[in-house]
Length: 256
Image (tube, rainbow, N blue to C red; front, side):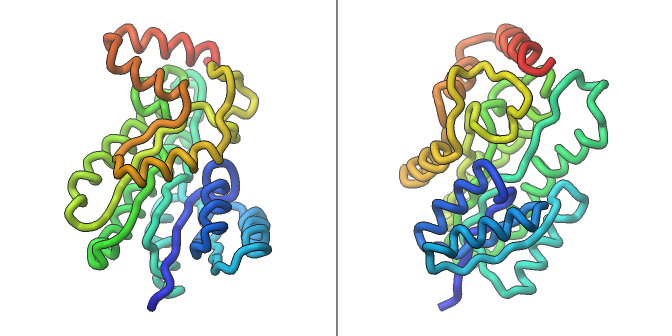
Protein backbone atom coordinates (compact mmCIF):
# COMPACT_ATOMS: atom_id res chain seq x y z
CA UNK A 1 0.00 0.00 0.00
CA UNK A 2 1.41 3.38 -0.96
CA UNK A 3 2.32 5.92 1.69
CA UNK A 4 0.08 8.97 1.67
CA UNK A 5 0.98 12.41 2.92
CA UNK A 6 -0.59 15.61 4.17
CA UNK A 7 0.87 18.64 2.39
CA UNK A 8 0.95 21.81 4.50
CA UNK A 9 2.07 25.11 3.01
CA UNK A 10 3.40 27.86 5.27
CA UNK A 11 4.18 25.17 7.84
CA UNK A 12 7.05 26.94 9.61
CA UNK A 13 4.90 29.05 11.94
CA UNK A 14 1.40 29.95 13.12
CA UNK A 15 -1.59 27.95 11.95
CA UNK A 16 0.44 25.85 9.52
CA UNK A 17 2.81 24.77 12.28
CA UNK A 18 -0.13 23.90 14.53
CA UNK A 19 -1.60 21.68 11.80
CA UNK A 20 1.75 19.94 11.33
CA UNK A 21 2.14 19.23 15.05
CA UNK A 22 -1.41 17.92 15.37
CA UNK A 23 -1.33 15.74 12.26
CA UNK A 24 2.10 14.42 13.25
CA UNK A 25 0.69 13.33 16.63
CA UNK A 26 -1.96 11.40 14.73
CA UNK A 27 0.70 9.47 12.88
CA UNK A 28 0.14 11.11 9.51
CA UNK A 29 3.06 11.48 7.12
CA UNK A 30 3.77 15.10 6.27
CA UNK A 31 5.14 17.24 3.48
CA UNK A 32 5.91 20.60 5.03
CA UNK A 33 6.90 23.58 2.96
CA UNK A 34 7.88 27.19 3.62
CA UNK A 35 10.64 29.65 2.75
CA UNK A 36 12.70 28.93 5.85
CA UNK A 37 14.63 25.67 5.68
CA UNK A 38 15.94 26.02 9.22
CA UNK A 39 12.45 26.34 10.70
CA UNK A 40 11.21 23.38 8.66
CA UNK A 41 14.06 21.19 9.91
CA UNK A 42 13.41 22.30 13.48
CA UNK A 43 9.73 21.40 13.11
CA UNK A 44 10.65 18.05 11.53
CA UNK A 45 12.89 17.18 14.49
CA UNK A 46 10.23 18.21 16.99
CA UNK A 47 7.56 16.01 15.41
CA UNK A 48 9.82 13.01 14.78
CA UNK A 49 11.02 13.06 18.41
CA UNK A 50 7.79 11.52 19.69
CA UNK A 51 6.06 10.22 16.56
CA UNK A 52 6.80 7.48 14.03
CA UNK A 53 6.05 9.41 10.86
CA UNK A 54 7.73 10.29 7.61
CA UNK A 55 8.32 14.02 7.12
CA UNK A 56 9.50 15.58 3.87
CA UNK A 57 10.72 19.19 3.90
CA UNK A 58 10.55 21.25 0.73
CA UNK A 59 11.85 24.82 0.76
CA UNK A 60 9.66 26.90 -1.52
CA UNK A 61 8.56 30.52 -1.81
CA UNK A 62 5.00 30.17 -3.08
CA UNK A 63 4.80 33.93 -3.65
CA UNK A 64 7.03 33.44 -6.71
CA UNK A 65 5.69 32.91 -10.23
CA UNK A 66 5.36 29.23 -11.14
CA UNK A 67 6.29 28.01 -7.66
CA UNK A 68 3.18 25.86 -7.15
CA UNK A 69 4.01 23.80 -10.23
CA UNK A 70 7.61 23.45 -9.07
CA UNK A 71 6.38 22.19 -5.70
CA UNK A 72 4.04 19.70 -7.36
CA UNK A 73 6.83 18.45 -9.62
CA UNK A 74 9.14 17.98 -6.63
CA UNK A 75 6.46 15.96 -4.86
CA UNK A 76 6.04 13.76 -7.95
CA UNK A 77 9.83 13.42 -8.25
CA UNK A 78 9.99 12.09 -4.69
CA UNK A 79 7.12 9.67 -5.51
CA UNK A 80 4.95 11.03 -2.70
CA UNK A 81 1.16 10.81 -2.72
CA UNK A 82 -0.92 13.63 -1.21
CA UNK A 83 -4.36 12.82 0.16
CA UNK A 84 -4.75 15.97 2.28
CA UNK A 85 -3.78 19.46 1.09
CA UNK A 86 -3.75 22.33 3.58
CA UNK A 87 -3.30 25.61 1.73
CA UNK A 88 -2.24 27.71 4.68
CA UNK A 89 0.51 29.96 3.31
CA UNK A 90 -0.54 33.58 3.00
CA UNK A 91 0.18 37.09 4.17
CA UNK A 92 -1.42 40.52 4.32
CA UNK A 93 -0.31 43.97 3.27
CA UNK A 94 -1.62 46.84 5.35
CA UNK A 95 -1.99 50.55 4.77
CA UNK A 96 -3.27 53.02 2.22
CA UNK A 97 -3.43 51.21 -1.14
CA UNK A 98 -1.32 53.55 -3.30
CA UNK A 99 1.29 54.00 -0.57
CA UNK A 100 1.77 50.27 -0.08
CA UNK A 101 4.54 48.70 -2.16
CA UNK A 102 2.89 47.21 -5.24
CA UNK A 103 5.49 44.48 -5.69
CA UNK A 104 4.56 43.24 -2.23
CA UNK A 105 0.85 43.40 -3.04
CA UNK A 106 1.50 41.47 -6.26
CA UNK A 107 3.31 38.76 -4.27
CA UNK A 108 0.34 38.73 -1.89
CA UNK A 109 -1.99 37.95 -4.80
CA UNK A 110 0.36 35.30 -6.18
CA UNK A 111 0.56 33.54 -2.82
CA UNK A 112 -2.99 33.94 -1.53
CA UNK A 113 -4.74 33.29 -4.85
CA UNK A 114 -2.58 31.91 -7.66
CA UNK A 115 -0.45 29.34 -5.81
CA UNK A 116 -3.42 28.17 -3.77
CA UNK A 117 -5.48 27.70 -6.93
CA UNK A 118 -2.70 25.95 -8.84
CA UNK A 119 -1.91 23.50 -6.04
CA UNK A 120 -5.58 22.69 -5.65
CA UNK A 121 -5.93 22.19 -9.40
CA UNK A 122 -2.87 19.97 -9.72
CA UNK A 123 -3.70 17.72 -6.76
CA UNK A 124 -7.44 17.41 -7.36
CA UNK A 125 -6.91 15.19 -10.40
CA UNK A 126 -5.00 12.64 -8.33
CA UNK A 127 -7.64 12.77 -5.60
CA UNK A 128 -10.45 12.27 -8.10
CA UNK A 129 -8.74 9.22 -9.57
CA UNK A 130 -8.56 7.69 -6.09
CA UNK A 131 -12.02 9.07 -5.21
CA UNK A 132 -10.58 10.20 -1.91
CA UNK A 133 -8.98 13.38 -0.63
CA UNK A 134 -9.36 16.56 1.39
CA UNK A 135 -8.48 20.16 0.58
CA UNK A 136 -8.43 22.67 3.43
CA UNK A 137 -8.05 26.28 2.32
CA UNK A 138 -7.32 28.85 5.00
CA UNK A 139 -9.45 31.90 4.25
CA UNK A 140 -10.15 34.58 6.87
CA UNK A 141 -12.73 36.57 8.78
CA UNK A 142 -11.85 39.20 6.17
CA UNK A 143 -13.46 36.96 3.52
CA UNK A 144 -16.92 38.28 4.35
CA UNK A 145 -16.50 42.04 3.93
CA UNK A 146 -14.22 44.51 2.12
CA UNK A 147 -11.53 45.73 4.49
CA UNK A 148 -10.17 49.23 3.86
CA UNK A 149 -6.45 49.58 4.61
CA UNK A 150 -6.01 45.88 3.92
CA UNK A 151 -8.00 45.89 0.69
CA UNK A 152 -5.98 43.41 -1.34
CA UNK A 153 -5.79 40.90 1.51
CA UNK A 154 -9.55 40.88 2.08
CA UNK A 155 -10.17 40.57 -1.66
CA UNK A 156 -7.83 37.58 -1.92
CA UNK A 157 -9.54 35.86 0.99
CA UNK A 158 -13.00 36.51 -0.47
CA UNK A 159 -11.71 34.70 -3.56
CA UNK A 160 -10.50 31.75 -1.45
CA UNK A 161 -13.89 31.45 0.23
CA UNK A 162 -15.83 31.64 -3.03
CA UNK A 163 -13.56 29.19 -4.86
CA UNK A 164 -13.60 26.63 -2.07
CA UNK A 165 -17.36 26.63 -1.63
CA UNK A 166 -17.90 26.26 -5.38
CA UNK A 167 -15.44 23.39 -5.64
CA UNK A 168 -16.93 21.66 -2.61
CA UNK A 169 -20.16 21.37 -4.61
CA UNK A 170 -18.43 20.33 -7.84
CA UNK A 171 -16.50 17.49 -6.22
CA UNK A 172 -19.01 16.15 -3.71
CA UNK A 173 -19.62 13.12 -5.97
CA UNK A 174 -15.90 12.44 -6.42
CA UNK A 175 -15.13 11.55 -2.81
CA UNK A 176 -13.18 14.78 -2.29
CA UNK A 177 -13.95 17.17 0.57
CA UNK A 178 -13.15 20.88 0.36
CA UNK A 179 -13.34 23.18 3.36
CA UNK A 180 -12.76 26.93 3.68
CA UNK A 181 -11.56 27.82 7.17
CA UNK A 182 -12.15 31.42 8.25
CA UNK A 183 -10.15 32.27 11.37
CA UNK A 184 -10.71 35.51 13.20
CA UNK A 185 -7.92 37.38 14.99
CA UNK A 186 -5.33 34.68 15.74
CA UNK A 187 -2.01 34.82 17.58
CA UNK A 188 0.28 34.68 14.52
CA UNK A 189 2.70 37.07 12.79
CA UNK A 190 -0.30 38.72 11.10
CA UNK A 191 -0.72 41.18 13.97
CA UNK A 192 2.95 41.82 14.68
CA UNK A 193 3.27 45.52 15.46
CA UNK A 194 -0.46 46.22 15.18
CA UNK A 195 -3.41 46.46 17.53
CA UNK A 196 -6.43 44.24 17.03
CA UNK A 197 -10.14 44.93 17.46
CA UNK A 198 -10.61 41.50 19.02
CA UNK A 199 -10.64 41.37 22.82
CA UNK A 200 -8.60 38.16 22.84
CA UNK A 201 -6.54 36.54 20.13
CA UNK A 202 -7.39 32.97 19.26
CA UNK A 203 -4.56 30.45 19.29
CA UNK A 204 -3.50 28.48 16.18
CA UNK A 205 -4.48 25.28 17.99
CA UNK A 206 -8.04 26.63 18.29
CA UNK A 207 -8.22 26.93 14.51
CA UNK A 208 -7.05 23.33 14.07
CA UNK A 209 -9.71 22.03 16.48
CA UNK A 210 -12.43 24.04 14.75
CA UNK A 211 -11.29 22.70 11.39
CA UNK A 212 -11.45 19.08 12.50
CA UNK A 213 -14.96 19.52 13.90
CA UNK A 214 -16.11 21.07 10.62
CA UNK A 215 -14.60 18.23 8.56
CA UNK A 216 -16.42 15.64 10.64
CA UNK A 217 -19.69 17.48 10.03
CA UNK A 218 -19.06 17.67 6.30
CA UNK A 219 -19.10 21.47 6.17
CA UNK A 220 -17.75 23.52 3.27
CA UNK A 221 -17.04 26.56 5.45
CA UNK A 222 -16.27 27.14 9.12
CA UNK A 223 -15.52 30.17 11.25
CA UNK A 224 -13.26 30.27 14.28
CA UNK A 225 -13.87 32.66 17.16
CA UNK A 226 -16.53 35.16 18.12
CA UNK A 227 -14.82 37.98 16.22
CA UNK A 228 -15.05 36.03 12.97
CA UNK A 229 -18.68 35.09 13.52
CA UNK A 230 -19.48 38.76 14.11
CA UNK A 231 -17.90 39.71 10.79
CA UNK A 232 -19.87 37.00 8.99
CA UNK A 233 -23.11 38.18 10.60
CA UNK A 234 -22.29 41.77 9.71
CA UNK A 235 -22.35 40.86 6.02
CA UNK A 236 -25.84 39.42 6.48
CA UNK A 237 -27.60 41.95 8.68
CA UNK A 238 -26.07 45.27 7.57
CA UNK A 239 -26.21 46.99 4.21
CA UNK A 240 -22.99 46.88 2.20
CA UNK A 241 -22.55 50.61 2.80
CA UNK A 242 -22.97 50.24 6.56
CA UNK A 243 -20.69 47.21 6.72
CA UNK A 244 -18.05 49.06 4.72
CA UNK A 245 -18.21 51.99 7.13
CA UNK A 246 -17.77 49.74 10.14
CA UNK A 247 -14.89 47.80 8.58
CA UNK A 248 -13.30 51.03 7.35
CA UNK A 249 -13.20 52.48 10.85
CA UNK A 250 -11.75 49.23 12.14
CA UNK A 251 -9.11 49.14 9.40
CA UNK A 252 -8.12 52.77 9.93
CA UNK A 253 -7.80 52.25 13.68
CA UNK A 254 -5.78 49.06 13.29
CA UNK A 255 -3.35 49.88 10.46
CA UNK A 256 -4.56 52.89 8.50
